[in-house]
Length: 288
Ligand SMILES: Nc1ncnc2c1ncn2[C@@H]1O[C@H](COP(=O)(O)OP(=O)(O)OP(=O)(O)O)[C@@H](O)[C@H]1O
Image 1 (cartoon, rainbow, N blue to C red):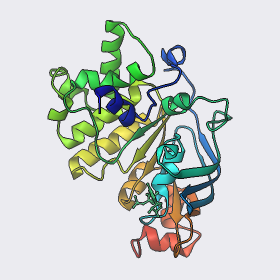
Image 2: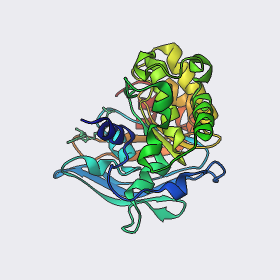
Image 3: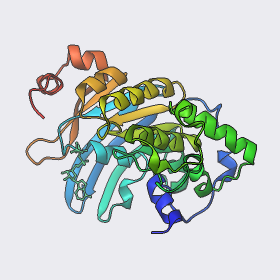
Image 4: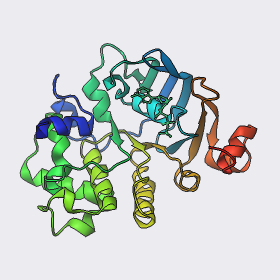
């Protein structure tokens, strides 16, 4: 795979299609945006894995998607930025509204959805041979955004600061991204996502490959980022869900049936006064 192709896959931005330079230049002052998933059904081939799942993810909050393995959390997350359709044989129905517009509307560009709704994956995936600096700005090329050197320098510092990594790497920006520790690499990936100024950041178990110290740093980063970007995180770690999220949605897929949301609401209520016994059993570690 060429470096360019690799960048496109890692950033989940398609290589072809129109560029969106004019919308990228400076969206720092955009208002926070919520994400409204309506009646989402998903299939892999003829296997239906989600059934009419609706969830409103509020602007400026962290929403945690929790539930046992295989209940469709990651599939739901990938539908939120049109990555599900990259999987051969995958299909979906339903709508995902950002700022009142359905990202699946035929008049909407897939590149725009992917730019506005960024994704951080389970396994840190920086470009190992590319410098820390170039990793941060890697997405700009794909979105067609050209910045002058000074503006780029400012952006790199801003994004690395927001990702909680600046002080650790400021003196070695030209070193390869692959030379960083796992936790630093994950923060580099967060910085890379932020550089294209998403309105929403999706995180699929971002700490599952990290040690407790790195996990704590990422959690602190999430707490700071949510002031400017809406966050949706999949986590298996109930303590993490309790620590980082404002709201939780509990997914379940019972006996081969498609996944659905049993209950959702403020995190405190989900943990301390859930309405459904299955939620109580799950959050208290009695199954899953
Ligand atoms: N690429 C794929 N092809 C076929 N089936 C898939 C694919 N990815 C996921 N599935 C199936 O879709 C269902 C939901 O999977 P998904 O990964 O979304 O669940 P999850 O709740 O995120 O699980 P986990 O917590 O283990 O990551 C499962 O039955 C899974 O086997």
